[in-house]
Image (tube, rainbow, N blue to C red; front, side):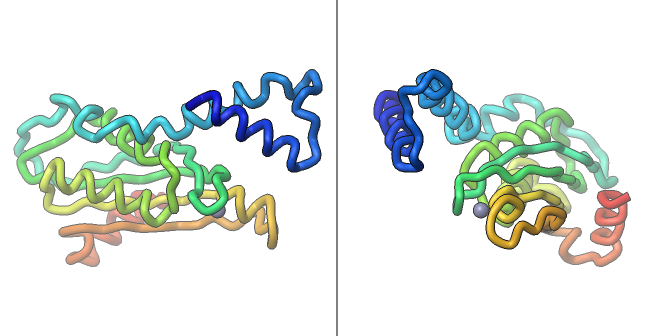
Length: 184
Ligand code: ZN
C-alpha cells in the first residue's frame, strides 16, 4: 500500500516537472504519504471508540457550548486544506458527554476528506444519535486553501456553515442565543 502511494507521489513530482531524485525530494514521497495518512486518520476511528464510557446521566437542561474548537481538514474536491473553528452546543435530555470528547469528535470527522457542509452535519448528527438531546447545533467558520491559493484568490473570505437540530431548529430564541454566544 505505502509503496504504491510512494510511487504515485514520485510520478506526480515528475509530471509537474520536478526531479524526484534530487536531494531535497528523495524522501518527499515517504514524508508525504506519512503526512497524508495522519491527516486522514479519521477513517480508522469511530465515534463510539472516541467516546468510550464518557456519557453520564445528569439532570441538566441548560445549553452546553464548546467554543473555538480548532480543526484542520482536507476538501474532497481538491485535497487541499481547509481549517478554522467549530462551535458546538447541545441541550441535554438526561445525558451529558465528557467535554473533551466533543473536540475529539470534531477532529475525527475533520481528518477525512470533507466538504464543510457535511463536516458540520456529521458533528450534529453523531451527537444527536449519541445523546438524544433536546437539540444540537454546530457552526463552522473556515478558510479554504483551494479558494485562497487558486482562481479568484479570495484570501480573506471565510465560509460559514450551520447545522441545527431539535430545539435549535424549532426555537428562534434558542438559535439566536447559540449564534450570539458562538459569535461573541
Ligand atoms: Zn476545494
